[in-house]
Image (cartoon, rainbow, N blue to C red; front, side):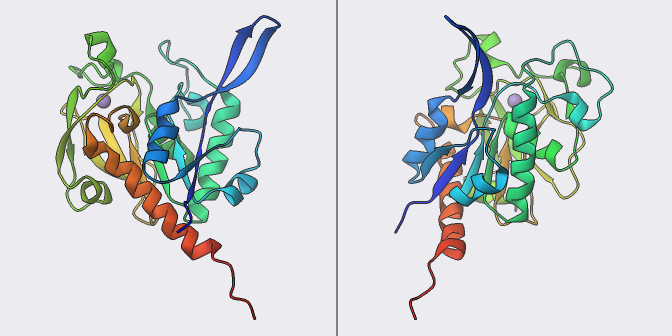
Length: 254
Ligand code: MN
């Protein structure tokens, strides 16, 4: 059977090169490695692609981590001093890409910034800085505690009978954590599927879609040492394979 293709959204940065500032794509290789390991073909999607052209290439989407989303896109009156790394071209591209993908029922796995992007694209809002919004919150930046990011740092509790709980086969697990923003008001139709002990939203999904699963943690950094997290990539690739079978099978010759 043909392998499904998984579009991956890279970061957009301005690199300081020897010829001056240069716009560049940037992607942690772990995302592509996880897709390959699960049997998919990773395809990097630069933000100058038209969403319809991008989606003509791929059978599924992996929305990756990165800098914070422009708070203006979810109606926040001000940019919090801790908000960083806003990339307007990336925000605009990914929001249109997600809206097109959901309209086609394309499978989506959203990671870290990805869950936040998904929520904003569908009309939800974000907490700009967790310690300011939740008193006695956990430190969701585990690197500040000296915990390597390929090791889990805090537990999450999953909501039973969700797609996420079915994929992972449990309602509690340990996850890694290096974010300072989180979902605030969930978008219409988006269902919360996991919480940290301090109440921070750690996962969400869109039940009206065949496969739209989003997590605040980074399974691409965990799946080698902690194989339970591999199930997320296996589920994405499996959903993409079904999408490909439904939508890309050539018509029989007459
Ligand atoms: Mn966390």
